[in-house]
Each structure stands twice: as structure tokens, then as C-alpha cells.
Image (tube, rainbow, N blue to C red; front, side, top):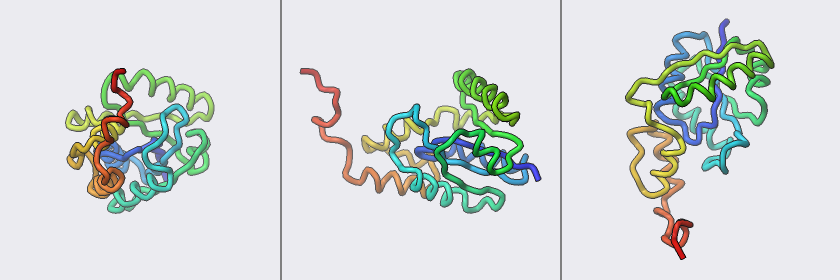
Length: 172
């Protein structure tokens, strides 16, 4: 059985991520989607349990997909789930440099290969960071995320955008 690991912070999970999972599920017998805590990124909008729940909701229709959430090295997760490959999505050439370096490190640490799946051009501009920013200021991101994720974002920002004094951008 060929198992792929698709790791990410998924804060929030979006349609570009969904495309990668759907395409990987056609290449592998099972895809394990792992919501990870990334210490290099700022404070997450959703905690790991919330992200795991969102993934379960968004991917419920894919029978060969399993969801986990962890706070450890990707290669440890790959070993624990029996993955023969790590799947990473690429939106643009700029993603490749960083992802290639991680792929090379992961292979040196564990021998696990990384497979790159480029997203379609209709998803190439979508980034979780941008979605958080747009949603935080009241913008509609429902076209870029699964319905269950859109509902979670609406719930998270139900109070509306931050008040002017809370933006931190005012000049004195």
C-alpha cells in the first residue's frame, strides 16, 4: 500500500490545498493530511484541534484520506504513518526554492522522497496568510475555501474588522 503524507499548517485549509489532496489521492492508496504546528509562523488563527476538525469536515468525501494533527518533525510523522512519500503543493516558482530545501533535508534525515504537485492557475494566488488578512477585515473569502472553512472563518470574525485603534498602523 502506497501512503503519502501531505503536511502543512492549514491555517486555514483552502481550495489550493484541497486540489493537492484530491490529486494526490489519485496517485496513492492513502493520503494522510497532517496539520502541523509551525514554530516559524506567527500565532495561528486556529489551534491544532480546530484545524484538524476543519480538515475532517472539508475532506469527509474522500474515503482514502486520513487526518492527523501533530507537533513534531515531518519526517517523524512520515515514519509513524508509514508514508513512502511526502506531498507538497507548489503555487509558484517562488515556493519551489524553500520546498526543495525542505525536501532535500527530509530525504537526508529519513530517505523519504518528496513529490511536488503544482496547483492549477485558478488556485495559484491563494495563500492562507492572505485569506486570514482578508477575512479579518471583513472580506469574503468563501470562493477560495471549502464551505465548512468559510463558516469557521465567519464565526471567528463575527465581531467584524478590528477597530481603527487596534490596527497598529496609525502614525503618531
